Length: 332
Image (cartoon, rainbow, N blue to C red; front, side):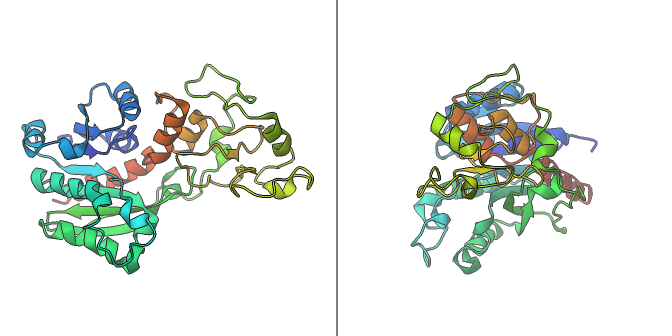
């Protein structure tokens, strides 16, 4: 790349998508998010980026035009929150017309106004088959109506060096007359939980360390007593019957499998314990399962930090997507 490709990051969160694109040499023009603690993390880790902390619905067309005034935008990236398609009882209701999906419409508005060469949308995999595929088709049609060719695929983050099975639908659109390229797998053998977590210093319940965000959660004695019976990759069935919980969240009382990639990291991973130590994973360890580097620091409360990590696009996966955009740009 002779000149740096320029990107805009919508719904930027803590910055996993941005980090992947930065690592591949892209230049950020501006990012936007509404959550204060997410923005605090973003500002700390991307001090040279222009972050707009406000509701995207309140970002006017003229503001967007001003923010990109001197740049031709190569790509708009983001994962607009879309609640409508995942709610029960809305089969037959058009995704585009559901008011809960107004943020998706905002993504379309920015693309229409900015006219980037490419755009990338990331969302949960179940969107692919939702409403018998109609939801996916509505999204594609909305962009086709403003002059973009669009394709989508389900990608697994583990294929790109992320130690986690995280399947996400990726939409890539272009207004150029060319083939759309999706990232190719970058590794042959999946990284496991133990591969990436084994070097962190061990912690007990409630213990802190000098490593940023590597602070163990406080657990009740009752929880710790039960969990000491659960082995690597095990579950509540290993707890003696007289102590075993009879009801409640089935995701409780399980341990990570050290010998496999992690299950999908979400905003609340307090229920799954370390494969070996008697505690839940720290924010630092969860971030590692998302492929964040150790010098990336999360701000805000511990609950917010977990949400930031769980909501992220894994940086390594973002790098693979960025590489695909570079390849398409070189074919122009």
